[in-house]
Length: 574
View 1 (cartoon, rainbow, N blue to C red):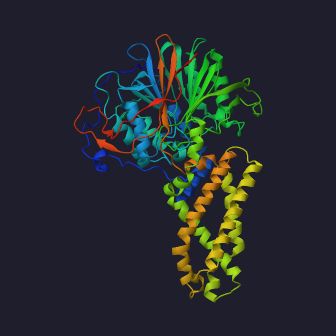
View 2 (cartoon, rainbow, N blue to C red):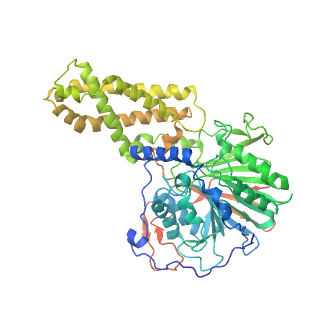
View 3 (cartoon, one colour):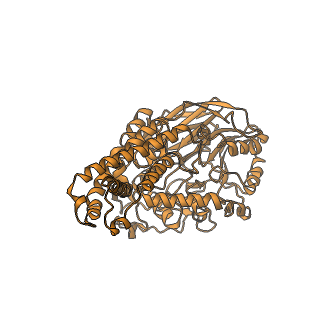
């Protein structure tokens, strides 16, 4: 193992040519729009990828092969003996949100809450560096490109910052291939002005004053592989009773134990098996995956979710005010003693989070036109089936050939709505409220279809010669009923969200770009760790080119000021 302090800026093989327009051919990447999460084809493809990852992930697990990679353990120390460290997660979505955060990370200094926060010497990406699924083009456009534009070259003054990353579930959809190519490289170890500092999909690095940072890759909470355990066991030999550990993990399993008691098991096992025997203490756990800021704390440990790097905003108003970790109902035969953690901070606050939820009526059809088109198509088929039964007209042989069985359409509608409330394979328990809300949602759509059928039968289109009514239904009825059905679905999401059902869909369907943030940590030479949770209330949506300036300056500048503040006052970790 080698120790490698934060290195000063050195020449790197990165082009210093600066773009003079927003043309993708000059930028070297294509700025992408936010992912339309409820688009039908995206839902299908993401679902297929998720199933394939669940079925074949164990057979294609590249972590088992990483024991042949180098086992370096770098040391991160700033020029003054302390260290500034940034943590950002869930970043590879729409360009405006992703680049707003990348731009702030790259600036020489930020001012928030009256505190001057210099640029960090170390940056940690906490998972889901790309959406909706991993691949070379997605990483280039949604992660590497924006971050290279934010910091094209190492800073002319001061040390060259180092970048570490752990994979989230979306990084795993291609078996880590693209992730390893970008972050685990022996030759071209640059991501813009940052130097990648790891040799595996997980890492350990020594920090000042007895602090250590461990980044785990537990494949979406499944398990921690033997080569990874062996790597951290070797690192843990350097820990002692005075050592304090920051643990970065892919998902906030401490919150998910409320519905999924085994979610924290692999993390608890790692702490008991690897860290506890050394006498060291895990004082801080960091995670993304949920796209908001939330801090749970007790006197001995802080657990922070900070997934505001660019993906759609996730609500905070349904967070439990108190959690028990590990949960008392875990099935692990051996587990750490259960401790209580209180919700100490969140961003956005509960009131604003609820207010964001009401925006679903406007944002859902605007962000997901394909979803409205799908509902319009299904409702048109349901109306035609109902109309055929209601008119008691067998019609011509051609009409009977192309008719839609009403019973089949009613069954599809009810089943689709019921499973939408809790899709098969989703984590957590299926409760009675999922079935009740899902079936009620399906019945509401059937009632809407019945009302639409009644209106359609009173219009002249239905009595036109065969084929013309179908064409009229597709052109006239489909778009109108699609919009109404979308509003009905929005109403369902808002109501279901108040019961803790489909909360993710309520906010994913809106694709809210605002409410972003990251953590800026300061470790003083005496070991004092202070956390500054940086919040961005509104991301920038208009950018101007910055061609004639220093080579390391950001390529694009916000057209309007991009203010930041603190999500809560800075706090220290013991």
